[in-house]
Length: 518
Image (cartoon, rainbow, N blue to C red; front, side, top):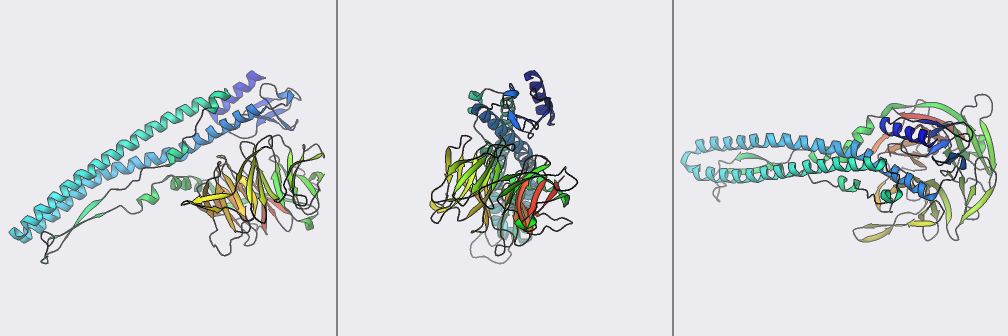
């Protein structure tokens, strides 16, 4: 089994395709849960298992850490290859072009000065020599600046290649001690040397008598190329890449109905590519199955202790839900069990939205009269961090007022929909504020739920304006998702392992499955 799995892992890492293997416990086919996770998943056993000893279903904490670090390295390499490396290549092309164009511009400016000198004869000879000297000195400075910039970007590109090679080597390392020494450098590569200083001289003659010689002849002005900074940066390249992946119109590939529809939809979470768990106002969680073509699509129902709970599923496929009534987080041990345990209790804070990060950390939205926070708990449900404040120019202010839905992308950034502030707020893994989004029309925007896809885009539903917004990981607006069928009151959402968006209609209880990426 271990040998087969090792070969499958090698095939996956080299080809980027999903590999297959067989569960020794039940002979069912094992598959990877996602393209960058090294865990095997047995759909029959309904659990994760260790690659070396799958039948025991005993995934230890150190293996979880190894998987998370592999996942993080894989995500960093993807970012470096798709966005950072193309930026450096494009920057070098731009520098080369300017290195060729600027001498010609200086030559042209000198020629204009020669023409002016000829027209004014001896009267302007002194002024002409003065401006030539100024241009020659400026040209030397410009070319020195360009040459230095070129060396910087060539050196950083070489260092980037070394980082990629080192990260690729780490992807094949299973030793947790070595993996824990990994330090992410992606923020370093995102910090770029400004591409400024490409000033092209234009000589403007002034034949009027000027009281301050030699400026009666004219002035030299330097113009920067237009839109250089806007076009040459990593977020712009990322936006170009992902826009090419979007379909012109999202396709509704399936529709499910949560019954009874009058109980509406509070939250949803994908279980598999064909199954989704839903919650409503009826103190029930319903497991729906797309493969059931005839009759009711409800595969199983779970009784819970409150109405409209927010739900999330861990890597071990345990279901967690928030109980606002008694301010607790409860756990249904597995999809095969109705046994419910209270795992977290809050005195003065009401739990709302739940989500799991790539590190299998539980993120909890907590709302209170005096403070509202996002709490992060590790795989053992020990508190790791409380996210509450942002620091802007040395001033500490509160991030949230009513955080209601939360999700996390492949870089473990935390994305929050705050219903009171009417904005989407994003912080990094350490809780440092990154950006916020208040819609295309700030006055009418009402973010309801949000999820992230496999490109780290943020998909946001607005159930008041009946829109679905898409942002990239830098907070740039990408598009509004449109479909042939109108989505009434878009509310809770989830994305399955095939990248399809499951979006619920809050009032009707319908769940529509959308394909929006090519």
